[in-house]
Length: 474
Ligand code: NAP
Image 1 (cartoon, rainbow, N blue to C red):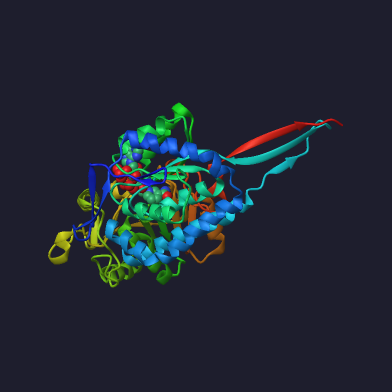
Image 2 (cartoon, rainbow, N blue to C red):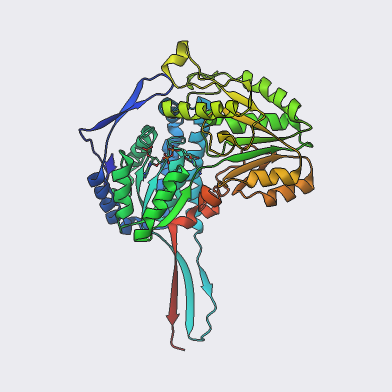
């Protein structure tokens, strides 16, 4: 752990396991309630000086972080793959977006404009400014062990907040590397603090503290709801990036090749372990058979194995629980009438015996009553669902508590506007399986979350609005 600019070890340690090989990648010290309280105290102490720096000085620190990340690109990508399994190609992309977040928010920090408002009284002058909220707690998941941290810490630090981070203990080593960079570039003590350990005691200390003014969480909807409830006692600001169940709709007028390639990209990136992965692939009945055939050809050609091997497109799942959950959804679908068009089993034998590998799977004839049609799938399983009309598919796509990402393919311009406006989702990709970028706001509606990360919106959740009214002598 890293508290007040010092690395601290405890006797209790945790091995981080490579899910492709079962090998120990590294070891971390476990923090608890007391360490978390110290981390909060150090962030509180560092806040006045950090928020009081001229923006150019804070931005200079962020630029130094960017330069170090650039130098360490390859090392970081390999670490991400080793600690959580995604392919080295996906890991390189993640390092790239981490760098982009620090760059983007360094630039945004210079544009935190306030405003002057005409007053009703001749002798008053009204100013509206924005100020950093104070100490921020950030809790992040294992599936993007570096970039989810950057999406929170870059805006927080850029606008003058100080931070206590708790990454997932499933994949905490990328966070440790990032904090080594903070240490090397001389980030002032206490500005960013890192605690790793059991969620309960750490989260309770963070949520109970009056000194922590904000919680920024990325993870499951279930845990997000617990944190929203806990935040009420001290009225913390909350940002929640939660689960998803993305519909991917292919209309009869779509470019089929583009749609098939997009479905593969959206479904199988990080072995399907992304909140924005296609979860329900709705295909118009006129093109269903052809689409299924072309997708089956692509899925059956995918190479699976240790993500460090450049030839592999799909790595392992994170652990045995993940395998069990995915397989349970597949078995439930088969029992209720789904057709296995490819895969449907855990991979075993040879290199697969050492890790948690699930065969990329294509299911046909999926129906609403199956678990996979409404539970978030965190694995490489693509369920195909037939539909007959635009109105019907919009209704079915919206029939979920989630509202994160959605996708559809069409060549009809009017349909593009019509459908996009009616989908109850925070993000819509039209003929685009990856509508996400540092310049654009990322986030969901309904039970997929609150607030936005990235874009010019990405700093808002770290700022309070301050009104100053001055009465003058005329
Ligand atoms: P998770 O179980 O909710 O864990 C997320 C983080 O919360 C981890 O750091 C975890 O620590 C911690 N945590 C677990 N229980 C907690 C508790 N009771 N109180 C406080 N913190 C707690 O989610 P996950 O399995 O890591 O990640 C997958 C989920 O994240 C999926 O639902 C996915 O859709 C979602 N996600 C959303 C986005 C987005 O931007 N919307 C992005 C990525 C992932 P430990 O792991 O150490 O237990």
